[in-house]
Figure (cartoon, rainbow, N blue to C red):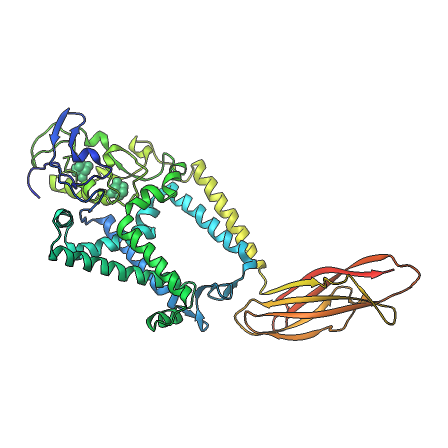
Length: 487
Ligand code: SF4
Ligand code: SF4
């Protein structure tokens, strides 16, 4: 760090366009010339930054990436603990197995997650984007690889501008090769949530995976390579819908990365320890150089800001070097900026979102409690409503589709519940065994003795089939249907 600061620029055509020509120190009316160094069009090479928030972001991102790859290898009761098995249409989550019929439970999980995100956004702005979003995590991982091969941001800019040479070719091909490897691993990692991980990796390694599995792995690898390697902040700026409606969740208590303009202006370069009438912003432009979306936070809150805190760390370093108080840029709410005490826990939005989340959690818990491990579908014979057979009997036929929704083989009792005395079931009180996750189609014919043959009026009577787990009688399910007869 030199003693005097000259405003610099990343040297590209990023949204911070004013940096590429000249910076006008707004309250001084002084125009500071800036050298414009052309780079690859639209390319952002962020300056590396250390600090509390960058350490926090890197740690969280690393943990999430590790978890992403490791989770599919966790086993529970001899099976993959978390697996969305498309082939058998089951979502396995440890001891719970969800079937397409349990779709509402999955829907609740996503709706609750969305409202929790709203709640977090209300408190801390777009921390999801800055610290948890896979797009951010993978982009930073790709940037890290780029830095290892091509050097720091200045060297990367220089390499962009340099004519093609063997050195450039080697560096670029190594970078893209490593990006490709990470992207391919990510494709495998993602598909491992849908196809058992051990099978998937062994099939991929032995080149024996099916066409569709291979195609999906390559598809997600390509998406990763393009998103994290090439698109990066463009995804956040132009494709992500969340950035567009996030402001609807904000209120004046929301913590967002904010430049304290009253303290910082008038901005301007100076020497260290130099007495000056200027504000605390020394116009070093570091906050712009480290910004992954290429914005200047000094222009106020912008939808491009992902709340990553890189500019907070960068500015704090500058403040420290100049002997100024830290937090010229900080996580601050609009109320705190105006010296109004923030009321985060009593705002209408917080109460509203919290109530919505609590109610949904209650409904979800109730649904989980009611969820049966047996599924029963009673299907009436479509050929005829009833049949008249000998001995004045009326007969109805059904097919019971019984699914064992657990991961263990079970024995069940099938019977007619309630007023079973009216019916004679050819297959009453039958015990059946159904293997884990399998469905049994069980035909049942029920008949009733006709009391009189004088009239031929069609009547329907309710009949209830019940299936009970013999090992746990509380685990039972029933379904009512109709029995058609003549009277
Ligand atoms: S302005 Fe600051 S917090 Fe926002 S994206 Fe840029 S570096 Fe991150
Ligand atoms: S806000 Fe801080 S980091 Fe940004 S230009 Fe001013 S002093 Fe430098």
